[in-house]
Image (tube, rainbow, N blue to C red; front, side, top):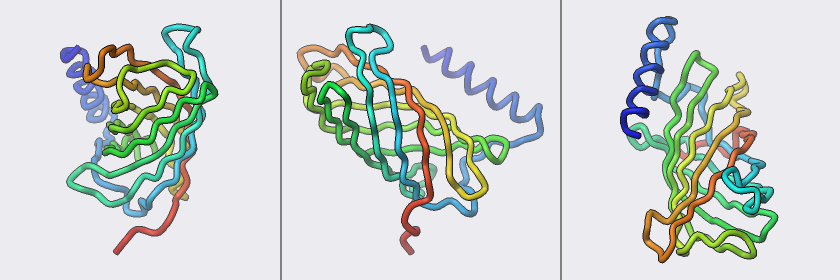
Length: 173
């Protein structure tokens, strides 16, 4: 798994240099906080886990080294709820393309959906989006939620999503 991740990072860096477009972890000069709304499909591994999911997130423009804080809430058609807060990184490619990996712990309630084995669950996600001149973004992502073996079981669940992000409130300071 680590070899595959290293290969992917290496290919991204190589293609960036070959195409003359540097990869940047620096914020765009006009980056502002984002309000993100997502629609998702869960149950990618098993059709019995299918649910339609909606998420709303606040993505801060405050940069802590290369990280930005964010938080949000997910609810799905099975009554599952997940409130989370964590960190993300915006990696800019070709000025308009943004890859955003993120990680967020949060409280999980299964409702009539999948029992993930513990109230504390961790969401890891990667999103690929197009950033418009206005700062708005449209993208798609995949995520995985699991309890990192803290609970009696750790089945995990995945989702694929489409996300629209729009500049939100002005940056503090």
